[in-house]
Length: 300
Image (spheres, rainbow, N blue to C red):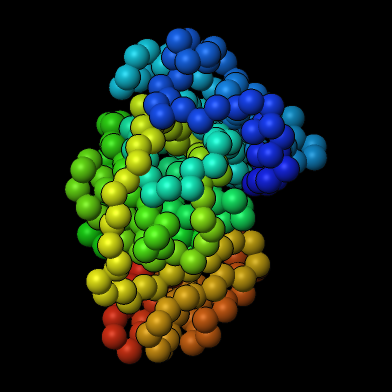
C-alpha cells in the first residue's frame, strides 16, 4: 500500500458536511456499519499500489471493544507493506486532548516479531503533530514530524487493552503522551496550527490491532517544556535506501546488527546506505560522546 495523504480529500469531506465527533466508538448509533470503514463518517483507506490483488481489512469490527460492541480494526495479512486509514475531522484549532483504547494482538504468523503500529495526529500541512508507535519488538516510541524516539525502559504486552492520551498545546507548541494515565513522553513541535486528521496505520508483519473509544476534549494550557531532553532518532523507518540519524550529540559510530546479534555494517556517518540489506528487521547501535542507544528499524 502507498501511504498517501491528500489534503484536497480533507477539504472535500469537510465541504460535504463531515462533522467532528467528540466521541467515536464505531457504534451503529454513530452511523457506523460493520465491514470496510472506507467512506464511513469521513474515513478513507490508504491508496492501493498498482498490481495489488488483496483487499485491505481496515474495518468496523465486533470482535472486541471497550465501549459498546464495536471497534476500528486492521487485520494483518503479513504483506510487508503499509495499510491503514485516515479520519478527516473538522479542524481543531484550540488546545486539545485525544485519548483512545488500543489492543495489539499476538503475532499470528511464523515471524519473530509483529507489525510496526503507528497512531498519528496530522496537522493542516500533512505533517504529524504527535506520533505514538507500538514497535514490532514490543518497544514504544514517541515523536513528531516523522522523527521517532524510543522511550527507554518502556515496553508493552500483546493481547491487552492500553489507553493512549495525547495532550497537544498549540500555544506552547508542545505535546505530551500518556499511557494508562501515566506520563511517558514530551516533545516540542514546529508544525501546524490545527488538527486535521487522525492517521492509524501499520507496516504489516503479521500483527493485528483494534482501536476504540476515541475521546476528543478541550485542554487547558500545558505550559512550556522545561528542559529539552537530548534525543536520538532515526528516519525513515521502515527504510528503502538510506537511513538518517538525528542527534544533538556528537556522533562517534553507528553499527547495524541483525536480530541474531551479528554485526552487518559499521560507520561514523549520520547517513547510512542500506539498499544492499535484505528485507527484514535490524538493530542500529548508535554511540555518541554522551551515550549509547539501540534503535530498531525495518528494511523494506
